Amino acid sequence: MVEVQGLGKRYGWTWALRGVDLRMDPGEKVLVFGPNGAGKTTLFKLIAGIVRPSEGRIRIGGMDADGNPEAARRQVGFVGHRPFLYDDLTVRENLRFYGELYGIPKPSLRVDALLEWVGLRHAADLPARALSQGMAQRISVARALLHDPSVLLLDEPFSGVDPQGRAVLEGVLEEEGRTVLMATHDLRSGVIWTKRVLVLVRGRPKYLGPPPRDPEDLWRMCGEHR
Amino acid sequence: MRSIWALLWKDITIEWRTREGLASVGGFCLATLLIFYFALGPEPERMEEAGPGVLWATYVLAGVVGAGRAFASEERNGCLEGLLSAPVGRGTIYLGKFSAGLLRMLAVEGFTLPLFAVLYGFSLQGRVLQLSGVVLTLGAVGLVAVGTLFSGLTLRARAREALLPVLILPIAVPIVIGAVEASRLVFSGGWEEAVRWVRLLGAFDITFLAIAWMVFEYVIEE
Image (tube, rainbow over all chains, first blue to last red; front, side):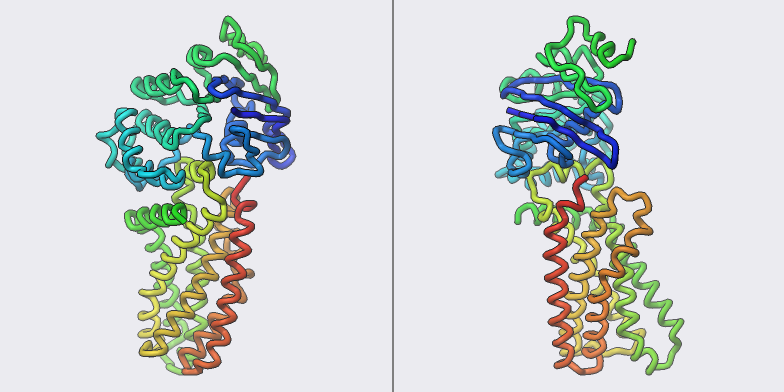
């Protein structure tokens, strides 16, 4: 379960995000939608524990993220805009490194299983710098799932993804039981997999509810016509 | 502890493959020692007098160069965000980075000290070598502790390269004074007196490390 109350983040005098309230039940999937600069990535970074809120609170799995930051982060997997991979380590070394940070017992077995699952076992010993964008995105998904998190944050997961990567992501979204918060401009994919939409405009929540019948209406909610 | 080892292993592996940090810090040390050698001239008395100061001026400036590279691997592909989203305390990240920086600094000191001894006419035999090792290690601990902290602080700053020396050098003054005095006494045989400076260096190191470990959380997070 993810619970966000009055969440806000300020950089200098500018509020990147303010007044966000969201409660996600276990296994629920929510789409975060908004134009560029709406505060979507800030919301993800706050829930992932990468940045500290300026106001409000976050509870993950019933735990206060401010009081138990490490325990809260342990429950979250994050696929961001960038792959978080070290260019000079191999794919396997990258995943093993993250496995160690997450305290996974026998990380090698888990790494091999995930590489198999994302269809990149053959690339395990390649340096991360040799990966295509699509391959890096698939490894990024594997990294986020290494510790089998109960909450998964997907920030624009379909951008630059190859067909195999899309299949991997769809497999993740099909799974029951994992709470997923996803931001995407790929409205068809976003609306198919989620039951609720949070629309953000200029850092403020504009709508929280079921997706509209015509996904393009989401753009209209943001004041943009496409 | 497992996370500190993982961070250390990751930084050492990357350093071993790229040798970027060792090449820049080591190259800088060699160049500085040679420049001072030619600037001070061949008189043995002057070399002996200026030697410890030259040695530590070299290591302090090398420490600044090294601090600039402390988070180099995290600056690509959003790896810092990957690190911050992991369930590891910020203090643990600091200690992992500090350990990697310390190893690099000790490696550089290990190969530049004999060169310094040859160029500046100091003997490194017996107890001098042992005590020099202690002083060099303690000096490196202090410099890397401060350098790693400020490297994290300036990670998102625009004029980072300009800011780092401005921040590190004033804070490192007590370490430099202690290290220069201890080295001077070790090289001249005043071992008993050197122990006082060594203790002082140790006290500075513990203080700097403890403060840096405690405040790193506020330094690294946006």
